[in-house]
Length: 399
View 1 (cartoon, one colour):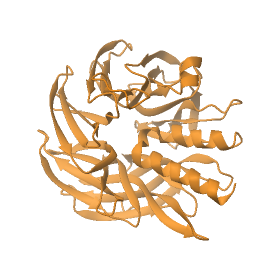
View 2 (tube, rainbow, N blue to C red):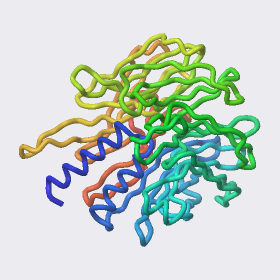
View 3 (cartoon, rainbow, N blue to C red):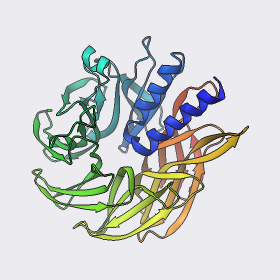
């Protein structure tokens, strides 16, 4: 592969990270399927756990047609894989979120249901419920406009709340329908209600939490403005807060601690680059404070977790510019950063070498942090990994 082609691949991968993180597996896969059907891709997008096992979801292209296929994997408490199931319906697919409901596993994402979807490069939002052994209990898709996807899921007493997006394939087409979506299913998989925010162009909800009888969702509107939107438990809109300087993905992670909500993302700086951000709000959506991480390149915080030592920990990706033989390229590194509850900086570490590394999710477990993502290798392939960090952000293991 020549340098110009490699440069193009890396630049397109960077756009995926900054603009459309929740589909990063899908777009990275598309890069390689266009350049080589021999390149292997496997990534993890989300992670959940109980006291006795872990569940990870993502996608890979380990099939004769080299389609991207959504996958769900279960691991014991020692992180030894007990099963992996591919979602083999339709054509390309990926899972972006997962939640555990007693012994059942519910994954959400998107897929090309039929040949028409595949030929038109259109995906439908997808929710699949598995039992503890990986057998499908129910599977349903959702679509308002052309391209639809589910990005995150939480469990409530009477079902599941799911965030996502449904937009026209051609963003020049305008409609009051579609945009960011909030959907509720009962535990049998029946659709209870759906709500939209924004319009058909680019609005998206990336993540959500339920707190004090309110649903809080984060994302971006049609004007590249980050949003924190509130609904009641019946899906009735309450209010929204806007942050004017985010990138095109807006806010992508959300957690709560004590009397505050913390959201993660990336903002444009005066040099037309991007800096990672954590913003703090009260429960009514009033802005309190923020912290900006300024690195040596373009940075984004993807997801957040709160540990039991009152720390806010963010994971993300940093794109560091470099020049090799006069050619400008980027090196992508995963990053973990820790702050106290007042967003005072505590520590941060980057992960990576000459290859590219991407972090996608984090959980706090056994007095440490388990980070998932994937890395590139010399043959051009991408493979997932689990990285265990101590509370002092020291790498304990890489699997």
